[in-house]
Image (spheres, rainbow, N blue to C red):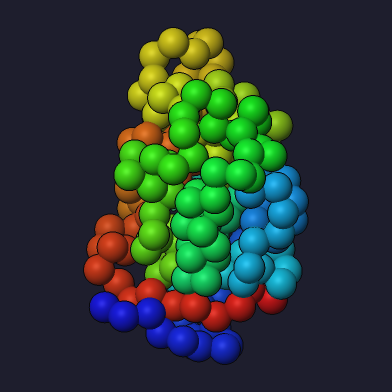
Length: 203
Ligand SMILES: C[C@@H](N)C(=O)N[C@H](C)C(=O)O
Ligand SMILES: [Zn+2]
């Protein structure tokens, strides 16, 4: 399917804040604390927008997490197509290595797309995908560390980090999400790859 050029969120998109206000939001692409080192085009604000079904499923995950003394924090939600386009341009610019040490120390940025760490047409642009963790918990690697150690079932991490990955995976699966195996933080609802893609600005 093509990308819908919308200026406003479609009616079946909601702000996560309106559905699950206790979920923390640390929307990394709206600021400079991300692998590009600067705010990403399309994120005018650090607001988590999702399709209603994804937001409701995430609210159910949060309820279960809170019952175990945990709290979710989201790092990315809906991602406008123009942001993915900017990621592609960034990956093709070898002169910009400002964030290499922090985000892709062992890999050439030009192969990040081929190796599946970033998608040219991302499920995030359907509003059915989310990047997240638990507040204050160690997952063995930081969000968006593009490295083999970020694979969800990577074994050579300490027991506490492994337990946190396993707990996040089981809670997300319980409420219908699928995980991207090479990134412990990335989840989407089934069918996201074939859903409609959007390009409205995040405000
Ligand atoms: C870039 C990372 N946070 C991510 O979401 N990766 C997947 C593959 C995507 O871009 O859809
Ligand atoms: Zn993601």
